[in-house]
Length: 172
Image (cartoon, rainbow, N blue to C red; front, side):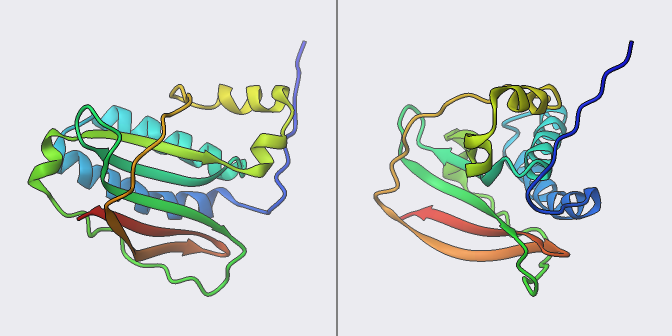
């Protein structure tokens, strides 16, 4: 006996677009790995796979790489990748600009996602099918404290109407 299922997104995305923009996020993530050794390369590959699945399914609006002061919710630094659909003309910058900061060596590092409206409205059976394609377990997260810092817009990664805008939060 065989079975099949079909999932459809509200936007048209191709694997090549998703891979193109997430390779740049992957390069950023590997730079973080090289600087701080918070996680293994295997974890980084699983994380990128999950981000690709989520983007392809239009299940997330944001991916965040967040450093918090050890034992607190105070954000020291964050790279925030906002997903942009259908935005022709968005620049396709080179990946990079991941600076080493000594104070981040003892910080907690985490990856957060923000689910899209599409995900929130999706039937649980459809979510379950998507979760089967994920390599990592994704759960709820606590609130963060951004009270002392500033945001700067840094880079954008795009291909054929799919883009990611990267902003950086730095604690002052």
